[in-house]
Length: 442
Image 1 (cartoon, helix red, strand yellow):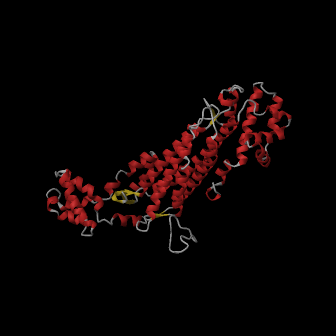
Image 2: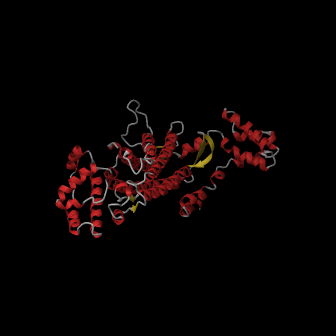
Image 3: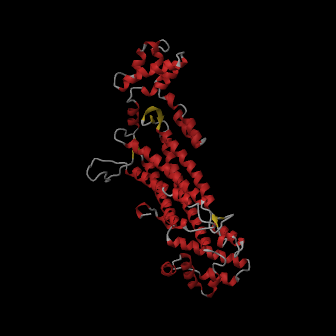
């Protein structure tokens, strides 16, 4: 991933230094386990642990000749150890190192992404509580529907990211497996207890059946979850972009002093951050199809998956880490315009209360078909600016036979639409949400 969309901590997980450090740990832990089992001398394992190191430039130099990265690493490692290096990599194959390392890296990346999600969830909850009772129009098909609250909008996105967090925690556990099983995964030349020892040292679990590689359905599940998180990032970003449109302007990204919106038009304040997030979400989701395609490999292994993973594993995790951090900042600093929300709510002259009038007429004895027709014939002129909905309803003689004029006005009460907001907040945030709501009720 390019530096523009990389944060240092996540980028370090995928750099050569961290990768070779994990390879070294795997080899050293394996030697310790072999020594404990009496396969190699304990003095050799001790020497390997003390002297083993690597030199990235030297590895690159060797790989240019060998065309094999693990052999280049082992050769560099051997140069630092000396004669005892002959006991390194006993009974192991390259995939034991590569796949176990990838599992560690994905677990490390997942831990950062879980922390990112926690920060985003905290920002969403804070703003949702702040605007719990900030009434705005709800839209379906982009058209005014019925009143909701801005806090309820944000609570919905909170719930989505909370589900994503659970999915990522489960995906982390699924992908954090270790394979030290040798060629074609039979343990013919290495004891399964070595794998168990290395897994314990690295915070992994042994892979039950690894063939010569860890099964790629685990990786596919992991990147599918990242794709879901990215979809939720785009969903919230798109909502903010729509709300920032000039014709709506109910909320907008924070615009800093000195910030510029356009090279040509000095007046512009564009939703550049959420547009950027929409694009990054596409990058993350792009990792899902190849991850699924990597599940199918020839027999016990081939390396068609390897080149793909070396590209999309760093790119997807780095891009998502950046996106989640950026989105948390957008939410935290989001500028909200309650007065504009109320003005937009009133734009259709009360049409947003049509369903309540419809229901009141059916409760008063009118058939649903006739009630719908009566409400609709009074609603349509309002679209063309010919009066207010309430006035037209009160003048309708057929409606008056079921609902007197004085009974219609109370149906245009916003509180009717927000009476269960606190109940929904308790569902989303737990009983603590009810306590936060109490001061507003007094």
